[in-house]
Image (cartoon, rainbow, N blue to C red):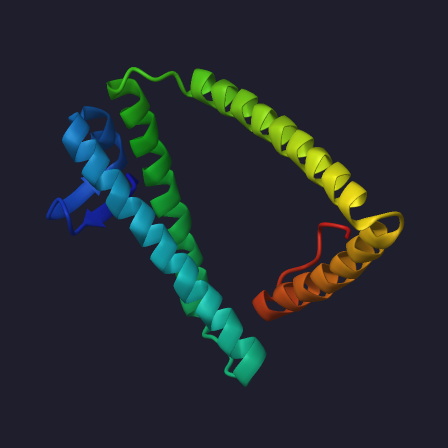
Length: 161
């Protein structure tokens, strides 16, 4: 059985193998449609969970199963469309990931250096002990806000504060 996606933008069903025959403009258009479809499904699934959690309105298990299956299929199409775009644009996916990793490492290093410079200036300006007290207060406030955000979205806490 071949996977198909009913494309509104292209006006017809697309079989997954057809993605590798698309020209650059079609591949871009299709990838945007797929990305928006995934976001829409994520929103609908999240809303169903929120309604169940906050209002006690249980979601239809069959609907949820179908929605998640449709999301997985759409994600498979989006992955193939992205591969096609990489090929048509002459970008090697491995090279792009490697470049992003280096960019993220440089960004992290710069932000760390900037943070240390700011901290040193604040410590000098505020005097001994004041900065540390403010940091503890900010940590506690952020921790409370973070836990509230986790609870609001129904997330399990993975990051240890």
